[in-house]
Length: 385
Image (cartoon, rainbow, N blue to C red; front, side):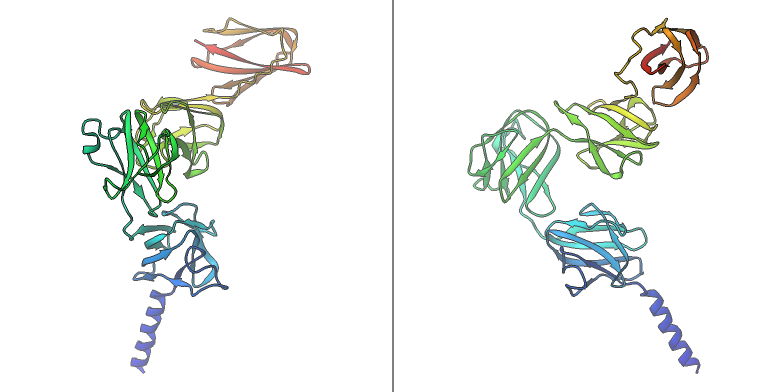
């Protein structure tokens, strides 16, 4: 009897240890159940971390699910790694062979390529101004053996080729810059000096040399995975207009990667440092400027509205160290005072054609007032010295 109970107890422990089964499904593997299959099951030794090696993946989408059922499933929007969420979106996949790891508790997943892809490098005087074609390649990276990228490299003005496996007889070139379609044994590409984010498609020969992208992201926007890119015309100063932020924090980063990112504790202006802290922001709409080389940034509230129908409104002195006098041809019904971040500080009801508003208690800085008279209103910027 004791042996039987011990046997049942051991079976129970074994069932507890392997209670959850994790599988990977989708068009990137064997299709979506139940119409396709068989389902691909991952292995585990601790019921937390699940793995599978040398999994062949096609271009498509996948999800992880528990116990061969959709009741508990994880999806994400990034590849080759990310953090899956319950009932999240399909994970986009890139064709290749991967070692796959999934954590059942926090949803994190990684796809690490195992197939040996051909190497693609950029070669020539534009990458080695001293040695030219006698110098080495600058290798690009790939996750699928088709699309190759290079980030954070400063080019010299000069010519270059794309070449495979460091072979001088296996090169692609074109006479177009900053983008074009390179052909085997084509002419060398005339590259301008500067830092570029380079992409090259080994199948089609399409390539581009783009300025480094600068994105802003954080819990004040769409989370810590999705960048909103700023625009640039020179690769140094980046801008975005009228961006809506909620209360929270943000950072700037380059080329959609945490390898190079900027943060600071200052708002609405400051200087971001590499790997610095999250930037605390106040909810509002902002025009944002960021300088890539210095890390300087400015968040300018777009609270100011161009519409101003109070043509006879006068505010003086402005700037002031003490008080502002508001004067209008008709009674001023209300004055709303806002700080630079759009936070309303106070509302005043003068009901007079002339009114003196005290600024003694206000810190030095820029403020905005919305003045209403009858059916008309106007915005004005005021400054406290």
